[in-house]
Image 1 (tube, rainbow, N blue to C red):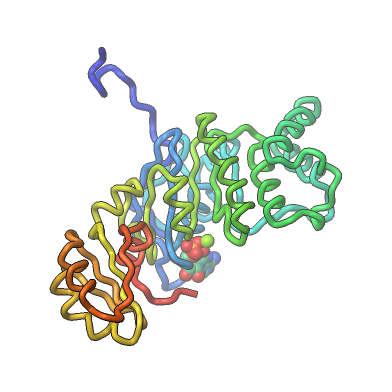
Image 2 (cartoon, rainbow, N blue to C red; image 1 turned 90 degrees about the horizontal axis):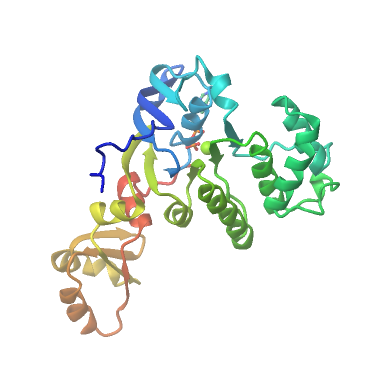
Length: 313
Ligand SMILES: Nc1ncnc2c1ncn2[C@@H]1O[C@H](COP(=O)(O)OP(=O)(O)O)[C@@H](O)[C@H]1O
Ligand SMILES: [Mg+2]
């Protein structure tokens, strides 16, 4: 048996960024980002609004020029060879930009023409993609007749027209209902099974946890943590969380912190983070009328710990 890493040739990363920065006027919105995305993985950028997720994706696509740093995508230096890289990338933008004057089929045909695909190959490719996106039977529908979920699936089908190795998705399921979201996730799992690399942005913890092999938590233009979802939770947060609700919760802050290790008061909810749940169970159980909920720590706890609880709009 081969020793791991000895004669097995490692594949080059799909994205390699070093010291990436972006400045607009007097404001730096990407403040020194290093990251690597490996072939075949689903890599997530998770961050609050305005964190810089879209800017990072746009830089990878050569649509926003970095102010400093180096960037390679699929081996191409960006932005110098962005056009060549983009021939091998599929893009699902944050807002669907399907042409409302064209039908489903016409949108795909027009997009295929940008890649110079041959007419004969295009028809069978489009049939395949409509089936993949569960839009067969809708090829003559107007864009306005599609639901939000269908439009997203059509955007995804369109992004696959050039059979890309890398698919980049900016908030693929924002605004979709749970059924439509599940549908998109199944399509994305299919893409991963076929060996493609995915990079997506999201602010949904569940999406990040379920889909992504690795996640970068982005805040104010910086990557504040990067790892597998499981490692982020085990490394950054205590495993047990107790939530105490009600007007009495605040009174428990000091005592809870003593028993738990860490306490945080958010509105009238007291959050207690503990490595050992037993002392808290014993004390809380003897307190008449106190309502509490014991749950395992989640990615959301990590996210809020690292990015804070202030509103971002
Ligand atoms: N073209 C631009 N000119 C000036 N500021 C911009 C521009 N594009 C983005 N920004 C700013 O950069 C920051 C990051 O934006 P963005 O990458 O869209 O964040 P996210 O996608 O994480 O919500 C925001 O504060 C945004 O206002
Ligand atoms: Mg964005």
